[in-house]
Length: 119
Image 1 (tube, rainbow, N blue to C red):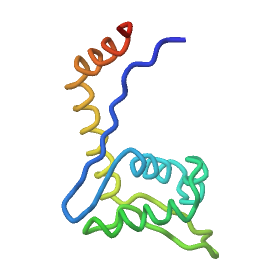
Image 2 (image 1 turned 60 degrees about the vertical axis):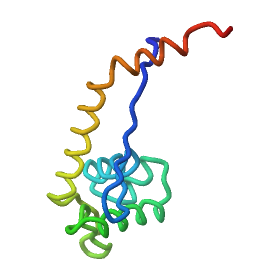
Image 3 (image 1 turned 90 degrees about the horizontal axis):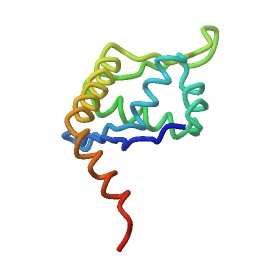
Image 4 (image 1 turned 90 degrees about the vertical axis):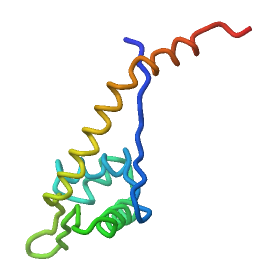
């Protein structure tokens, strides 16, 4: 099995107390793929109330909602990313990719230093 390299995890603190990081990005990704908040929560081993709170926080933190929720009933409910939600997710992924590329040498140096024998 290949040795795992150092991973970079980015959380962005935006004005107004809005925070966006890997957990919210994973939730948006799962909602986009599964079309359901409940299914997205299950796929991430997250409780539905926790997932709902994160979506409500994200929707309240941006001028336009990131996730559109439809309650159950004849249409069976569901959730979908809005255009703004897709754009925020794309921007976050781009930021992570850029930061990952820019810091690869430094992260590899940290791994090299960790691998040194202790004195």
